[in-house]
Image (cartoon, rainbow, N blue to C red; front, side, top):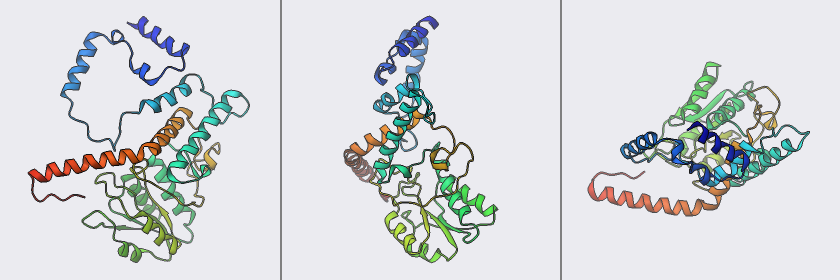
Length: 304
């Protein structure tokens, strides 16, 4: 079995352009009949998966875009003295444009991080600490993601004051209550675009306009919204770096950028932008069907 597996892996090296579909079709004899039967039994017992907002199988087209940067185009994008580095850098910058396009930003405004948790930490803590001498008040909601709430609690330990606004029964923040919470020393307002648990969409445009009028920075966690609904961001001012190092990613997020992951993100954004309208119509039809079936059998149903 090990010889067969090594032979198959050698094919990956000799044929670097192998597709994701080919990669997924590893001969069953490499795994063994017992392993296959066990996997099939587990699959039959597994419940229907309905948590794709938490994680989802990778689109084979995204994996196809990533594979060359694991196998052949493996250069460090920050190495400027040889072709391997140039190829990786070009791929990273292409991905940066793809990500920028889906949210209406400029490529220079896109900073690659390890994910939403790190990004939220950079924004919330970075803005607060940058204005710490003049403004030490933050406004957020009680229903934000844990990484935002924990960032705010960490800032409270540093002497910042945080106002945690409740939301209404429908999950939306009360704009009048938000406006009343703003103070001359408010440095930041943080309200997520789409809630990760109940799916409610906050009035981001109205909140952004209010913050602009009051000259307050506005941060939104849009991790659950990108690729699902149209987004357009305004140019944001520079925030304080949280990690010291090689100065990568405009000095805001040091550390070597991983080309395969960045390329995959760029490809996913391009596909999502192209198929967003169709996916939205399709999912909306499924949602309407689900609600109609539920309400036909149950009373006192409230649709969020």
